[in-house]
Amino acid sequence: MRKNILLTGEPKTGKTTLLKRIIQDFKSCGGFYTEEILNGNKRTGFKIKTTEGREGILAKKGYRSKFRLGKYGINLKALEEIGVNAVMSALSDKKIVVIDEIGRMELFSKKFKDLVLKVLNSDKILVGVIHRANLGFLNDIRSRQDTEIFEVNLGNHEQILKKINSMAIIK
Image (cartoon, rainbow, N blue to C red):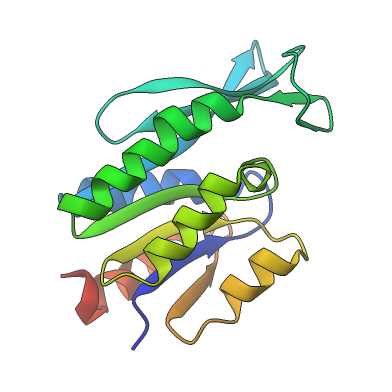
């Protein structure tokens, strides 16, 4: 039985928007999601936000860090103190654990990667976003028998929501 639900797709197809709708629909959720930081219409970074309302800067242009992805300096402290802690809390007292995203930035943290595996191997339902990159850790997750991957595009949000709603595990 597939108990882990992961969304993937091209940038700007609404993966996080869809994830936020799932969070609204299913109240026993905990974890985190990310949002763009915009200056006008230009992205300058990413916020990390928990389902409980905590937030911090995950990555930002000009942020000094030994961990970098393209033009962004990555704030592993925020990922681990806000995101990882939110996921650990959800693992102990929620039915559904939310992780947005399992991607290149987050993979700099061993603590994060270990926790993702712990959630995947738990009896909890994981609902999250996984980056499309061809990386060993991500490929291992995608090949799991207990994981359903949904390819998101701008036209299929409602169809994916219906499929997720019909899955017996999510009710």
